[in-house]
Length: 81
Image (cartoon, rainbow, N blue to C red; front, top):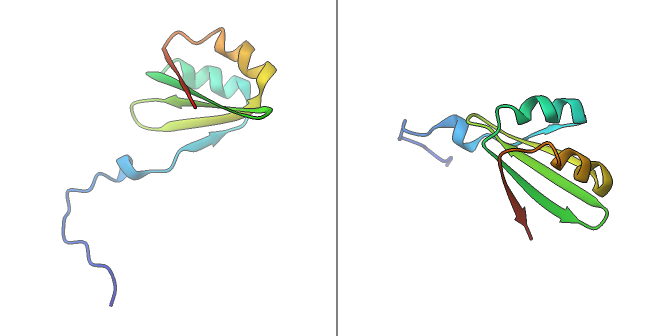
């Protein structure tokens, strides 16, 4: 017996997975539309998460590159654990 969803009120965009981006140029382009930037530091890697009205974008980078990219961020920045 499978799962049956009878409610049609689900917003598909609200449950979409974050999209990973792979370049600093792409990050800067998306930054223009972003409303928030979250930073997750794990060891020698840093995840920069940009929230736009439609999607969350994630860039995994080094500490040094993250620091240079964060100088251009003009939206709210939140440091996550």
